[in-house]
Picture 1: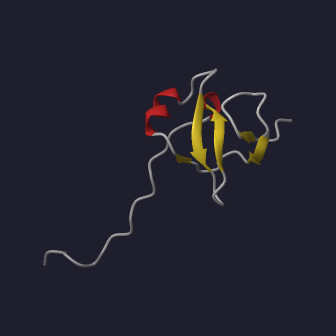
Picture 2: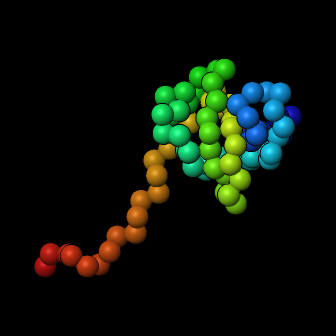
Length: 79
């Protein structure tokens, strides 16, 4: 069975694994330009994982999701 997505020190399969991420782990994109690579085999994305670890993941295993919405403020409401 596939253990998870490997977070690597450099953008290649020979690079050391920093961590193995569980499916569904939310990652922060550190290079917004690499968003175009999401879902493409052979491409890499620079990310930060929960807990602050950063590195590279294979883009083919990543999908974009909407950011968490900010909590609504009660100030500024119209009556």
